[in-house]
Image (tube, rainbow, N blue to C red; front, side):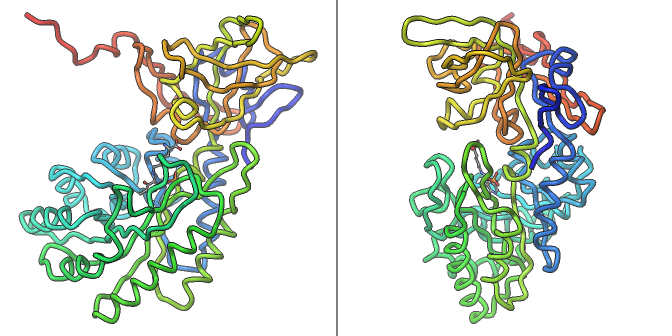
Length: 414
Ligand code: LLP
C-alpha cells in the first residue's frame, strides 16, 4: 500500500495535490511519500521483530539524504557500495556501526574510510579483496569485521541485468571455493570473520529462489562450524520484488516467515538489504505533456521527462504504470510516452491508453527506487527536483539543477 491515491478525481501524494506540487516546483519532478517509506521499512522490521536482525536499506535505490535521514530516524542500518554512499549515510545522520559495505571493487581509500568510521561489516566479494582489506586494516592498526559474499548459483528468475546469483555473474565467491577462503580469512590478523552473505538478484517475485539460496548458505554455515569457524550473522541480501503491474511478490512478513522457518533453531542474526521494496512505491515521477503528435500508425505524447531522468524503461524495458494526474472524461488513444532525448530508446512507456492534451501532468508510478539515482545529464539536461511530502506539507529535498551546474568543474583551454 502506498499514499498516492485519487481524491475528487485528482492524484494526491499523501494530503498534497500532485498538480499543485508540479506547478509549484516545476516538472520533471520526483515526489516521495514519507509515510510510505516508513510503512515499508516497518513492514520489514516487524516481520523479523522476534529474531535478532538488522535492516540495512540499500542506499543505491534512493540515496537522497532526506530519504536516508527518514530511515535513520527509524533506526535503520544501510547497505552501501561506495565511499560516496557511505558519506551520504553519515551526512544524513546514519550510524556507521549499522552499515554493511557491499560491492565487488572497493578501493583502498574506501576501505580506509569505512575502517576509520567503524562500520558493522565488509561484505567481501573475492580472495584478492580479502587480502587487500587485511593489509589496509593492519596498517591502520584495526581489525575489519568481514562477511564473505558467496554465490549460491541459483537462478533468481529475473531480468538478466539484475540477476546476480548465478556462477556466470561477476558477484561473490564460488561456493566450491568458499570454505578455503573462509579459512584464509580466519587466519589473517587484520580480519575477524562475522558472517556469510548472498544476494541473488533484484525484483524477485517468487520466494523459492530465496529459499534455495538459503539452504545452500546454511549448509555452508554448518560446514564452517565443523571447521571451528563460527558465523554470527547471515546477510540474506535484498531483492524482494514490488508490484509494478500485476506481479504478486510475497509481502515482507511472508518472506521473512519463510526464511525464519528454514533457519530452524540456529542462533544467527539476520541482515536484510532491501532497496526497491522500501523505496519503489514510495515515489512517483511527474512529467508534463509538451506536445501530442501522430501519424496513421502511432500516437506520441512528447513529455518533458526523459530517459536521463528515469532510465528503467529504456534500459530494462521495465514497465511502470503511467497515470494522469487529473484524469479526463472521454475517449482514450493509444500513446507512446516519449521524452525529448535524441534516442529512439527514449521512452517512459509504450502503448498506453490515455486521454491527453498538451499541458497535462502524468505520473509514472513506482519511481522511488532506481529512478533519480540512475539519472544523468545526458543531452545536457539538468537533473530533476525532488520533494518529499509529509502529510499536508511538501519539502524540497533537492533543488532542480541549474544550467551553470552542468559544466561545473569543466575548464576552457588557456
Ligand atoms: N544488496 C546488494 C548487494 C545489491 O546488489 C542490491 C541491488 C541490493 C542489496 C538491493 O536490491 P533490491 O532490494 O533493491 O532489489 N537498477 C536495477 C536494480 C539493480 C539492483 C542492484 N543491486 C533496477 O532499476 O531494476
